[in-house]
View 1 (tube, rainbow, N blue to C red):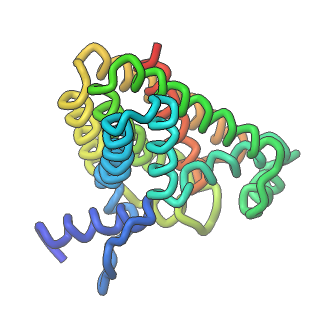
View 2: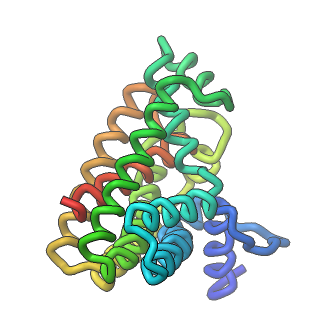
Length: 251
């Protein structure tokens, strides 16, 4: 495939990988690494759904805290909790494993331990509270913030795939590792455009800086803990970036 058909297929693959939204079937799927530039676009779909739920709930007079909870639930349903699962697996593996092999073994276990449960509580709680605060004080702005953070929190994943070695010999982290700097930069450009359009520029710059710092710090932790990236690490990076963005906007 070439040209527009190839780009459309990459967007479709990104939606299939990062969401549970209906995306049709693919007769000829591109390589995962080719689709990383479209990860922010998949995030935009998720953010659009959550923003619509938030705006609708606020328009119906539902309290801002409940409206924020409904929007967050819509986001989790749209992704199937994919990123939350990655965060929980990383927390369990990094916190409970004695060595690299044991950490990876724990991360592959479908059961959630105490570290993972606490990580989920904190992630959902922080995002819920931040969105509730923003929805209460700036109800017209909050839906745009939801979309902006959903887009931009996925932009750094391409650089993680590019710069971090795959921690496993199989899995998404290994399959997607064959990407390029150009594709990662396109994803970053899309995120920057989304932030510039949806947020005031001072807030956009602060959000971008906070997200980059959160993901760089966690990338360093993952490198020390398991020797690189995996699908779970990418999910955790998205969660931490989104939390960092909310802390900036709700301060």
